[in-house]
Amino acid sequence: MRSETTREKIELLMKHLGGDVRAPGRIYFTGGVSAVLFGWRGMTVDVDFKADPEPVGFFEALPRMKEVLNINLELASPEDFIPALPGWRDRSRFIAKHGQIDFYHYDFYSQALSKLERDHPRDRLDVEQMVVHGLIEKNKLQSLFQEIEPALIRYPAIDPSGFRSRVLTFTTGEQT
Image 1: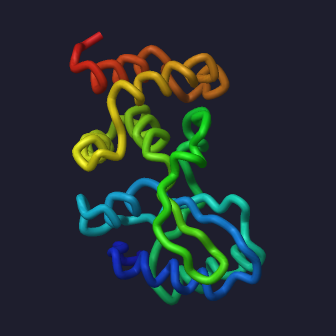
Image 2: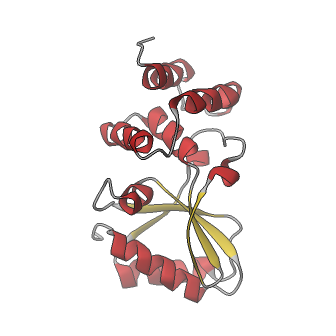
Image 3: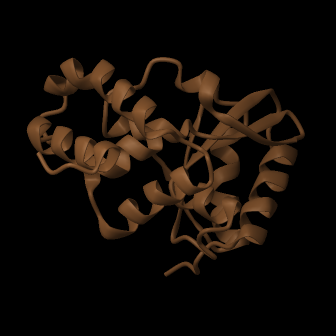
């Protein structure tokens, strides 16, 4: 069992990955990493991220990073669970550059919708913190949900009416 991941471990991960790859690329962090870096959580269990484009040497570096830093690394992003939101790359927030890698927070609207779909208590708290920190606006979240709603049919694990209800309850405060 690996230890929980703190801000210091995330920063070391970025530094080491930036030094290990042999070509430019981007890493998009999501979930607990964003919560830890913004300070509304002290640690996270998993480091969830997406590489796009994947830098040369990226996959070779991951096993060493897991061992050296004693962390859980998961290749996961919101688009693995819900349809990709239009413009997600443009809304992703820059964190830092290490070596040839640019590190970003995956689009917070995508993160919020994937958390509302999953509907765990910690996820609901994370989405509230995104609003508190000015990372998302409720009316824009609702609008982006409406843009992807027709594509939910491609995600059979999702209950579209339940998902819609959770989004509307969060964005308007009204039960549906």
